[in-house]
Amino acid sequence: MLRVHPGKGGEGGPGGSRVFPGDAEGTGVSEGCSPNPSPPPARTPSELGLSLRRLGQTLQDQLSALGPGTGSWVPPGAPRDPRPPEEADVVVVGGGVVGWSVAYWLKALEARRHGMRVLVVERDPTYSRASTVLSAGGIRQQFSLPENIHMSRFSASFLRNINVCGVIGGGMVSAQGGPALLSGCPLSPQEHLGVLNEPPVDIQFQPSGYLFLASPQDADGLEATVKVQREEGVQVTLLSPTQLKEKFPWIDTEDVAVASYGLEDEGWFDPWTLLTALRRKATSLGVLSCAGEVRGFVTSAEDLMAPQGRDLLSARIKRVHVYMQDSLEYQPVTCAIVVNAAGAWAGELLEAAGLPEALRHPPLPIQPRKRYIFSWHCHDGPGLSCPFLVDTTGAYFRREGIAGNYLGGMSPPEEEEPDPSDLSVDHNYFQEQVWPRLARRVPAFSSLRPGSSWAGYYDHNSFDRNGVVGPHPRLENLLVAAGFSGHGLQHAPAAGRAVAELVLKGRYETLDLSRLGWRRLVQGEPLVEGGVV
Image (tube, rainbow, N blue to C red; front, side):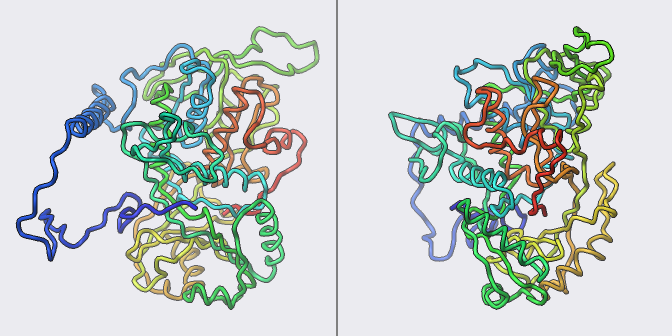
């Protein structure tokens, strides 16, 4: 199972700090300690040198990231030269968690080190509007489609061993220098995010599981889904209303016929940590990145002529036009492969200039859908055993830290979708829609203090609410990894590996995601996922 990292995720949520007795005002002395403690052991020259190198690298990253005259913060590791290279083997459009996962796996699996130039293009380098960092950070095994279950299991295994970084003398070592534990992990040791001599990655995982509640009319469907999950190796249990009340006394079980509770590899973690870890590792392997927006393409269709009265059947992308931030200037980048990992804007990307109308069919049915997340404090709310609860009404919540803080939300009906043109929050939605449903399910929430709130985007696939992964049917060197409709964060490690295998080997090897490809769009056959929250 994934393990909790103690000392993280306090009142401030992910990344929050905890205050221990004796730490106040920086004294470092607690009750019962000697007033004259012995001095700490002297640090060895190698330890001191390592600390100084880390400090120097941190300062260098921060200074280089700012750049001359930028006037705004960008993540550490941003290149000094804002322009992309003129050529790249693979251009990944979208620097969210899926895009960086694709880039990482391309370099981790390449046959010859530094044999391929990979470029990641991200139009929002501050990630202020990125779906990745604005999500609730959940990971679960409880899906209805085997492909989604397989991706969740792969990602859980990947995250469990996230700090493994390489092989020394035939043995596996972690980024901290200790032995690596890879029991049950299907990945080879170099395929993780630890970077030698760098601080270990702490995703602040909270292994509290997911709890799905079903009404009498939905009970049969939930039980059928659990049967599929168990066949795929998921550790999940069904609870009757009586068993549910015994395990979670704070739940009102009225109108609940059955519940499913994940026992392993479910909970939530810090999305920002995973994103930065993927970017750090990919950059250490040689991946390039730039801040810009792909708004145009040049294809081989310009060199071809379709038979009279017939549409062009296929073409290749020769170049992408990367527009610089706050500028009309663009840089053409010649490339062999393009990966569309643009998330909520993946469909819009395929409407860009330079793509012939005949090659855009079928259209990619992915659009941004705005989703709100609200936080609140409830002194008498559920404690440490609180799972990520999904109510019969679709409302959800989870614990945030350990001091009576929670966050949650609910997807609106199709006819009440909010305007996605900005990320403003409708606070009445919490007061009128979310809060009453949660207070009915958890009576303690009848009295709570609302906190902060924010909005983010689902990359909503209106066709069947499932990810689209694989090559485009007419643009021969374009691959897509988008449309996960809210579960892209947890499936990013698996989807990135799958796309990288298609690029490097021409086939799926680790996970067969063929059914998530374009064929279902061409044939008009939805592959519906019933577990979208």
